Length: 130
Image (cartoon, rainbow, N blue to C red; front, side, top):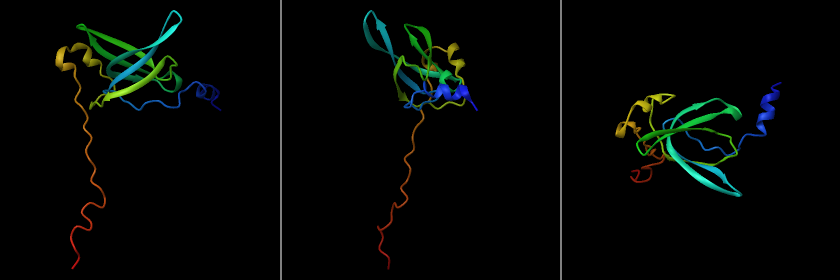
């Protein structure tokens, strides 16, 4: 019996956005200032995902005023309001730490393009049967 797993189920979010390493995401984080709560957006490339269950984390990196900024988020954190995938990335690595050494346009990740799937019945009924 996995007691810890059963306890962690109560704290896990039900509607987690499906994203992977290489995707460009916008994370809306709840910030408390005095008695007000506002959302602050952090947009960048996901360079790593680690862990599982409640302890699952992901690292987002972006360049701000010429300096690389990385931030680690818990996937199931109550402080995260939303995660939106801006662009799907096509990468062949599980961790993109090599982006730390790059500057400028070389830090961009190739975009994954979705191919339109042909329909199963395409062309049926166009030609008459003789």
